[in-house]
Image (cartoon, rainbow, N blue to C red; front, side):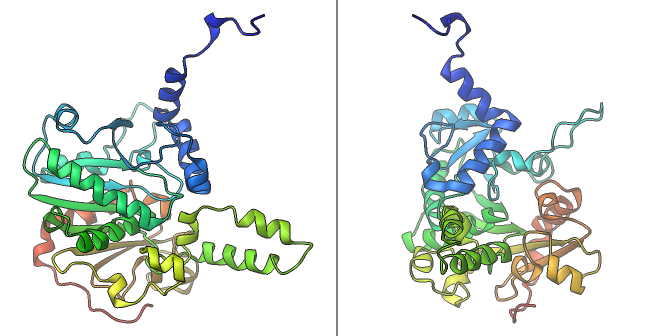
Length: 342
């Protein structure tokens, strides 16, 4: 006996498409991936195991035919966007509004119009190790450059939060692998990336260790231990496999310096409207402290904005204007001096 009439059954592909392209569905996907990482893989598009190119929130294969069809106005200047923890590429786009006002364009569309960059948005499983996602980015960019509709002359990487660390990890691994696309990368923009770690994750790690010492609280310790590898990497800002395997400090020069031809731009925001205030140093943007997102141990140009929080970074006009100005004038800028963290 049929319990459910076939005529009201929803095809699995229709359900999958709705889940992966709707805002609610993508929020759920981003959260599950980020929270549980490898344990969340169910295959296919719903909980993707592999990093992928996204256009209108749909997967684009990095083949010549698919890329030519998807990017008919492709230029040789490619801007690659990487989202942050428990999110998807939708984080770069303004939320739909109930008002009649038009939705403001995303950073990629604006860079295309202003500086002739072709925007490429990526989706990845933020619960995996940063180094694993970095390795996947190396492979994906190799295929992208090889099959791009026109010859790629320049690549810039723009990462929000964890996305900036994934980009940095990929650049290190590309250098080790002598990836042919690496010389084309000229700029790396990190928006609120926790280069030396995020205090919230360090606090959770300490709590898990303390709870594990007592029988009565050991179940809480085991529950906290279920958090994903990607989240655990954020405690110290690990970029490399050897770091999370051995617990090595990520502040060693050989672990933080990028190829000399790649210039970095770190954007920091704080709730405080006063730069350098005690409140700003202690609270930061609610998730990342300025001493981490503006890591002074690296050679980078820096920009700070007050009165903003972490989720403002991938969509705020002030942030876009700063990035646009830097990309337009970076050749005339001098890297900030390397010194101790604030």
